[in-house]
Image (tube, rainbow, N blue to C red; front, side, top):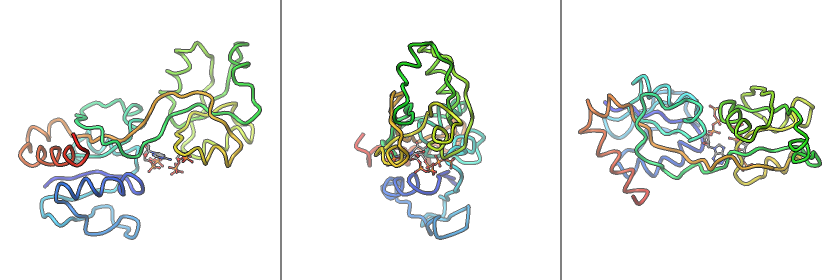
Length: 212
Ligand SMILES: Nc1ncnc2c1ncn2[C@@H]1O[C@H](COP(=O)(O)OP(=O)(O)OP(=O)(O)O)[C@@H](O)[C@H]1O
Ligand SMILES: O=P(O)(O)OC[C@H]1O[C@H](OP(=O)(O)OP(=O)(O)O)[C@H](O)[C@@H]1O
């Protein structure tokens, strides 16, 4: 049995065509089912539905053989025990620093001000500001980062931006680009050795589907 860990929403939807290329069709959609283990048309393949940030953990410990996770999540996780054979070029976005319209970010940085930064991505934020020599107090949040500057919780946020619609709707502007993000196929290193005959063809099918 091969177990693939996916999160609901964009990762599940954007992985569907890649699964199809490997001959795998889920028996149901996670949005319309409360089931966390979803069968497929193949007796030897099942999907488990977990939080996006939990996908690397399930694969690291071998509870799933394969998974799909954003680079944002993989960097925070650290990548221990994971083989990352493919950038799937799905769920593309950018990790950025943003502030409320009118906040003089460059001025604050030049004056050496200590900034309060709210984010879910504390490791990447810490590294980014340390490299710039900017002093920050990091405030860990788990979602809706865009709210923090509006209610005085933070001067800036570090969050994902795709269309820019969420920033715009909340009167925020992006001031720095940290990195481009896309999702990767991740594989448990031990599982790849033990189940190579089943897993390698799946990696090859995914690679073919994205034109590699
Ligand atoms: N607006 C976006 N456009 C494109 N890709 C995105 C966007 N937002 C997030 N992503 C990517 O998709 C991945 C999954 O995002 P999703 O919104 O499904 O989970 P999440 O809500 O960030 O995670 P969790 O449920 O663990 O809090 C992210 O890790 C990121 O790599
Ligand atoms: O630039 P945009 O196209 O507006 O996308 C950016 C938004 O997308 C992500 O949230 P998501 O839609 O995943 O919501 P969630 O994190 O609350 O699930 C991210 O955290 C931003 O809030």
